[in-house]
Length: 128
Image (tube, rainbow, N blue to C red):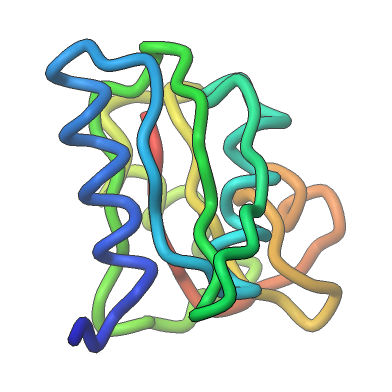
């Protein structure tokens, strides 16, 4: 049994994207659904669907082939609103390339949305 469902889901998505598959299936959790919504709105995946199987639901993800790398950030470090530039430099390959997914008091958002709202938060993952 997996301890970190989000890490397992991101690894499955990254692996299937690199191999060239058009879709994959990951385990269900509320956080994974929020992360997939962010990835979909930024064009990293095409769509996803929650499938109820009676045991613990699964999510079918349709990949777009745009993911070079994705993963979780552990430990879930906190970031102040003034430290976004340094954090982006650490986790993303270049300025404006990719997104960092962060949990804020206003919900799970991208680093750009957190900067616009002038918020800090806890780092969850990255995609580029």
